[in-house]
Length: 262
Image 1 (spheres, rainbow, N blue to C red):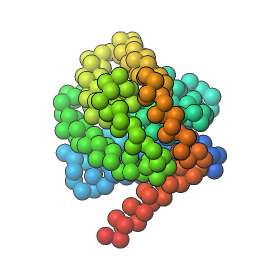
Image 2: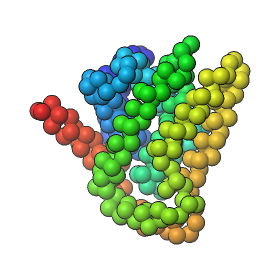
Image 3: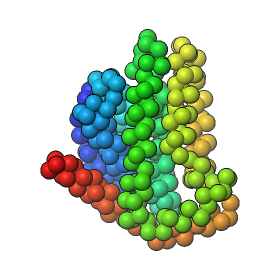
Image 4: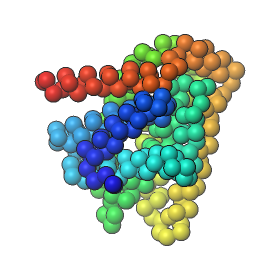
């Protein structure tokens, strides 16, 4: 059944997390991250943080549904977008970091899906009518960055070593940032909203191809020192997917309990 409310999305994400925990699947990493984002958006709507709360809920549902559809397609051996396919396929491997798994999901979802969702929600309205709330949702995502890095530190104790390469302009892992992704998503939406028919579909396909290339650079890293650092971090990282999901998800549960108590 298609999701129609943000609570439907939260339930679907919780189901994926439970399924991935039971199956010891790394596919649960991104779902756990996304649950944090969705809960934060829900809280923001309730607090009147957005210009148009009902429209923001619609954007959240349309946006999240693209991920849920891609996940279902992959589970049913169907073909999602290229950028989601490579993210899901890498979840079958233990050779990359938890951080890289999350970045691959963010790459597909923010760089491709967010712009499409924005255009679909706007309909015949100008895209600029959505910009304030679009920026607000991305502010929420950005605000979660430090929290997520803290949590990742619980499962990947040497992750801070990536900071050694903060000045390495060739490092795809460092270059990738939520800020750049959201700006790119808005530019993509500006181009997409002007397209119709087959041009619309082709514009999305071309974007998907570009984002897939970025995904490959996120997987392989660049340069000897970066790859050596990734290897070292990986040695000391938790290897059991269910254990990683539990750490990330339990922290989220504690936050919800504290919020309800307040």
